[in-house]
Length: 176
Image (cartoon, rainbow, N blue to C red; front, side, top):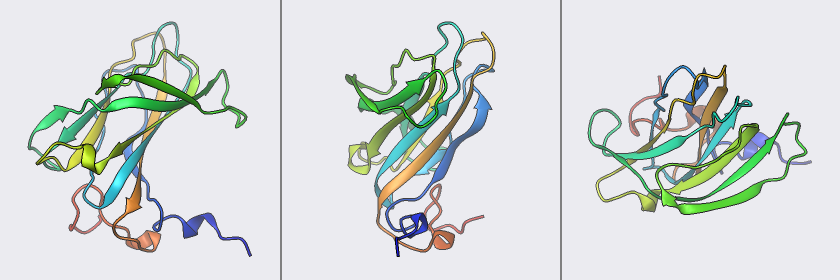
C-alpha cells in the first residue's frame, strides 16, 4: 500500500500562512511572522495571478528578534529562487532556477501566473534573530493581482501528527 501524503505532513514538513489570498495592488502587504526555532529551514511559496503591464510582485525578506515587537531587519540572503510561470498555470510548467546577487528583495520580472519558491535556513539568521517575515511591496494599480504566500517549514525538530504540530509564531505557546 502506498504511503499517503499525510504521512509526510508533520514528519517531513508543515505549512503556515504568511499572506492569505489578497490583492497585492491595494498597497504593501505585511506577512505573518514565523519562528525558525523548531526547523532547519523554511521554504517560502508565493502564488500569484497574472499582473498587468509592468506590475510585478516584489517580496522583501526580514529577520526579527521576537514574534511581536523586537527588531526587524532586512535579511539579504536570497541568491537563488525557483519559478514556474505561464499565462495560465495548469501543471505542465517546469521549474526554472534563477540566480541573483544576494539580497533581501527577490527580483522577478514575470507578469504571468506564477509559483515562486525559495528557502531560508535557520543558520542564515544573524545572532539574536529567531524569526522571519516576508512583505510584498505594492505592485501598482493596473488592476487586481491576487497573491498568497505559504511558509513550508522542513527539517522539523519536533515531528508529530498534524493535529499536534507546534505553534510557528511563538514556540511553546498553545495553538489557538
